[in-house]
Amino acid sequence: MDISNRTVFIAGATSGIGLELARRFATAGSTVIVGGRRADLLERIGTEGFATVLLDVTDQGSVERARDTILADHPDLDTIVTMSGVMILEDVRDPGHFDVTQQTIDINLLGTIRVIDAFTPHLIARGAGTVVTVTSGIGFLPFPPMPTYAASKAAVHAYSEALRVQLDGTGVEVAELVPPAVATTPEQAKLNPRALPLADFAAEVMDLLGAEPTPHEVLVKAVLMHRWAEREGTYDELVAQRAQALSMLPGRK
Image (cartoon, rainbow, N blue to C red; front, side, top):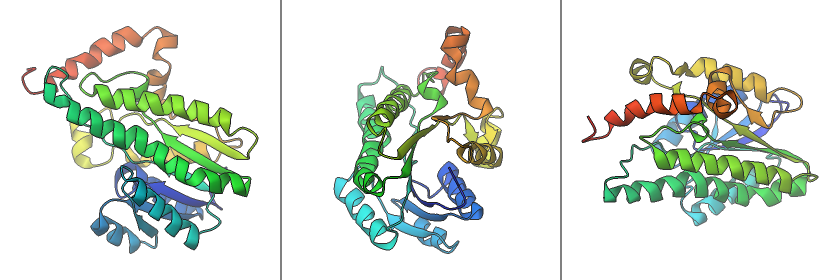
């Protein structure tokens, strides 16, 4: 895609990867609308020149109001990025974990679908556009302390594949961004020295998004070991290594 001449809405871009990609699109020359739940963060982001909109992806009414606001101000909208998501530790031996399960599915999977559904008619009517879903390397190589997060991202991957086929011939492309561990703060970099620095990740992503044609899966080099673990025969070994992180859960020391 031509990243220098797009009108992009990023749902869930008030911090981290989403905000960095918003800045990269803007620097490249695109118009960017940032959506999020926190009015204080949106106000601060607005001082950078971004259009902003309140959005709670768990609330159908909120999604529809955000869509109507965006399309009224930006009828040329052509790119949707579904960045909203949560990563929460979850001990399946604790019956209380189901609250985390429901929250994770509602935001990561159903929230993604709500946003896509809201804008798909507009993109089809234009006859051109791009939907960028956001999954995770964990969707291909589970991280045992976050079982529902892994499941939600695997589900978004499958949904993205089916969505691409259903939209074939409409002019609407579907690209799936698959992040590895990314250090979005100095504290995260200290906790996980293997995490990819945010700036490096974003630069590589923008190069891939700017390719012609846009790849179906946007895979930075650091996520390839996750994406292709089964094919390369390293899946069982890597999952066993990652199982050591169960010590992060209370009572699992």
